[in-house]
Length: 227
Image (cartoon, rainbow, N blue to C red; front, side):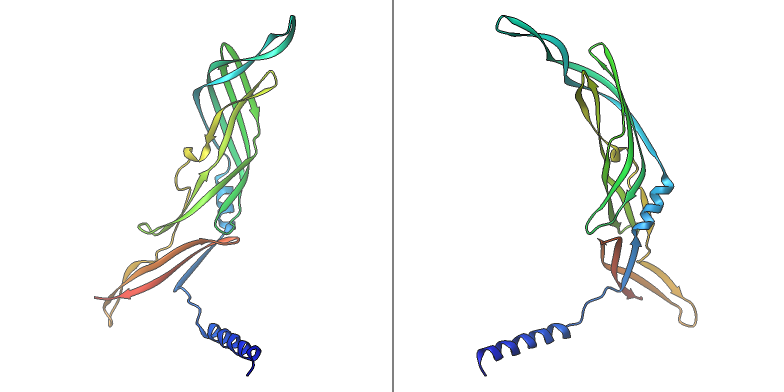
């Protein structure tokens, strides 16, 4: 047998060995489609939050600069302490489950009012909204939890045509955690009545929550015991 035939026989043997190996399947598989999240956030509707803070920023003002002996108008900058209030709303949240993540887009609106060194300024704008939801398995309550991980909105005004950023607000930090809970009672106890009269304990093992394309999947093995 030449080396080419030997290699072919070896490859065929390996392929047959792999094909003969059984694929492990979990005892329980629970799929939650992304439409469940979409229906949930649609029912919640628009969410509005607000607050206020202080910061120090550089503020532009009309000044006079010099080019040699010649003056000319220019923009100069100085440091100013700013107190500001803001409000923001988020609506039309559209989550999409992709492998390993739950990104979402949404419609947003923000309003800012500020006192800038004796000058009152304000802004109203609709920022682009992009954020992420997170999914986790909580073993003690036996629930799938869905929470907002981050949703940052810039707080800013415009002065003399310049974009002045006061800071960023994480809307997720204002919201309940989690937003959504789904109970999946894997571990439990029950009694089989007469004539068996036996108490059965079911224990979930190897529980795993995975984010796949278009759905999240909970898998687990079950162990049955009886005293």
